[in-house]
Length: 479
Image (cartoon, rainbow, N blue to C red):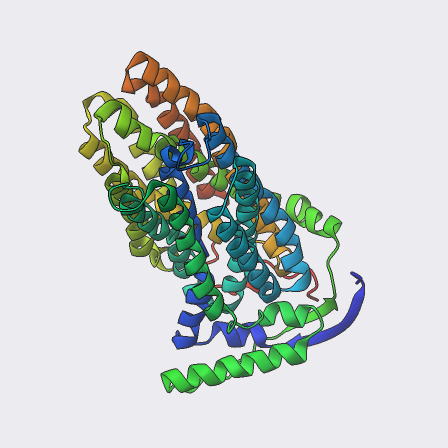
């Protein structure tokens, strides 16, 4: 494998993909690829609900509170490592090969988790599960963006990333009966919960096998004949399902083909060619990570400790549904009103509302706290999803998967490692003082970082709505 030029080709593949009307084929791509976020939401919520079951020596794994926290950190670490490793492999070996491999890794690991005999086994499986999910994010986001027409790309990305909360809602609801010892034996319930993710992942794999390789990746890597064949097949299916004639296109692009792109060139692209876009993505990922963890990380314990709620699943489900509905409802505006305005508005407004929540903590009940949180994250959810949209479209084709992985790792580490350390201490202090107001500094931290991300977006966001990926960021190999 080499990064030297292997040939040149002039192609109209990007223009042909972007001019397609929405069709049944695009739905197949979304079902096969987009449902990874449902799996992640399911995993995180289920694990967050089963700490009591895992601590029991008779029905669980005799894990301590510290072990539970370690398992969470191990999952996050696996996701960060997996995203970076599989992200680079996705740019090197192709989207399809990696989105099949990463889902396979997830399936095997989450199935083995259900059969954990010891805490160590559980830790290893959680790390590998996180690795599969982290790898999914880079492989899937890049593949979706390269096959969805430009005029639909914003709404599709935002809605699909928001489907994480559909998985979270399902996870919150299924744990109610599964972790009820009157309905399911305690030793079995938490193991069955992991089995749900495995079954869903297997169904996704069956659909995903029919999703082709990204034609954009193919022609850049010297396989223009295969790219042409894939696009012709897509066009045939679109004509068949819509009954529409497809307009001819004139736009072409000439590519100096490479088998691989050197890591030094990728790093230079990030920090030398597009430093403003790098600052933008960093601000968006860190802001949304801290906003979510400042509220969501402490939400379940807050309900139990300060409001006496014994079954938090229903409250978590309401919170999750508001996130998903917000992403679904507001996603079209990212293509009509535009990226810059929508990112700025969602980040700033949700950050300000969380700050208001911090000052109202002493006057809220469990229901009003949940309602206010639902409002905050109805607006924040499409903003957080737009961070992934931004990272996936503002960098050149050859670096797309690794760039997504890089910023995903930053956001995940900030939200899943630094966030819990900070907000966990605030929660412990608030519990010791029996004062819910002790959570306010955490809320305000998330608020400030979210508003800061919105301000950065106001000045640096890229107006990518309706534009081809090649016009937003010219491929490194383009003439």
